[in-house]
Image: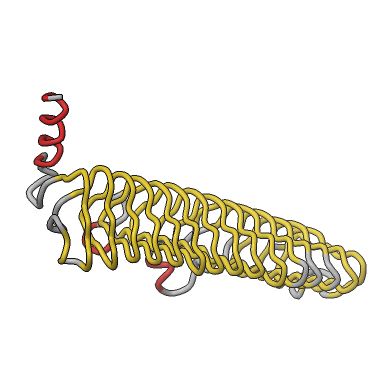
Length: 265
């Protein structure tokens, strides 16, 4: 019994660094109205009645609005935020599960985001499911109404899938080639894709692409691979088109029905 009490006291007073200490339990009404200061870490359970913030949470983090610098565990609430140090720096990792209406990670996050409305991540290795999913660097699986990514690889399944790895601020993170599969009901788009697009309606590729497009309408800028659809269009192509209307604008045969091919890239 004495040993257990000593252990609890040690945990409660164990310094996390110059910023503060660790407590096993934290209760917050509206930061800074909470039992322990926000510079303290939480090792077991944090309950945020309205809004709580602490540096590090290891364990369960539940409430209305949950915010921390780092998370290793579970966050459940209306709004979940893992902000990282200095507003989000790559290399400061966190991991676990976020379940809420909106989930936001500004760190290298390893785990699962389940959002009723939206998920957003600076860098995610894992799984996202929500009406809207976004990750600048994505390695894993996105499922929802609309999916956005800038670089990485994996699978996107949604009504609309977008890989915008050469668009403005996305590029500042180091947007590059996306390796994987897009499965869309309405529209798939990728700037630079090595993989496959499957869509019931429109597939579109910009930049340099290597892979396969299967849909009613397929369009591409520079592509190495295969297009299968009712209408196929490419500016430059090293590969084959199969469809009713096949256009390779800079090919030997700019237009040919049923089958067209070019090996000028």
